[in-house]
Length: 448
Image (cartoon, rainbow, N blue to C red; front, side, top):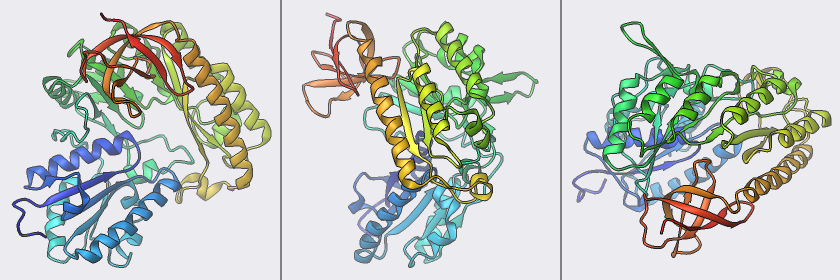
């Protein structure tokens, strides 16, 4: 460690989902409270932490590539401490610690409070490991250090873990059982964001709809009630949430969204497949008809709501008929956008133990391409319908392509690019949509 530094500098690299981003902010808060400082420059750091994801194989492959980079840094600076945090740490603890003496720390998602102690042990030459999953840990008392650059949008975790046990998914094994966070601490954290002039908050959970908290007085707070409580804190704070599980998305949630203008008109509702046979093998807990019924409810109660989804191509035993049913469901729903993946078997899941990964790789690739091509068409059609309309947009930053333009998102979570005029990041503006690309709406501010 560089003795000229008053405080040891920590570089945190985050992979994977929004939950991991929020976890990195919790880690930053814990370490700052113990005398560490966060740096954005890996070259300055005496501690390098990678917060990892195990959801898909390529996410882990990327981290192994980064570990090779860390190895080179450690060769030049042997005092640098390297730690692997999060889901990959939970899943591959022994492999990581045995990896050529590169990794000094392996810390799972429920053990971040132990980081200061483990770091001190690592400074003394000991390996640090804690991957125990805790049924109670929600980090409810910790105010995360916001690592985002724009100061406009933030994430607040409302649940941790998952009880759904989808057969393809590793999350319950690396993040543990589902537990809900005390609503008072959620409201406190959102109020802190309002006080810091943030304009948007996303409530996070593997399945936000199953949020449940019972007070000491016996009053139960479910997700629709929590959503309402957050929305009422400030009409100027946009509220989003992710992710919704179709089997738990109630009409009560939809009516709550309809009641409050600051709850955004977007629902991410992963379907994964359009075939009921596939959904049963995936242990999703609903049929394709049930899913379409939820879509019908959204369209009825929230006609302006956009819908996005997740889709898996090539799950175990998938046939051409199953693929056709997925494409058919996509057309029926008309998803506004989607996250689409080839199935990759994750060790220790029910699918890995009980189902054959028998769809050839080239067939998976072809089916994924068919899904992507159809979704590109659906996404463009969705954006074409917005041309000529006017939307309230929250300015999030400069356009990547042109510094004289801003980008922001509509309530429906669609990205809009427009000339900046005299507004600043964090302003709400009304933008008229003039044209679009398959990925982006293009417009002009009409406030003036």
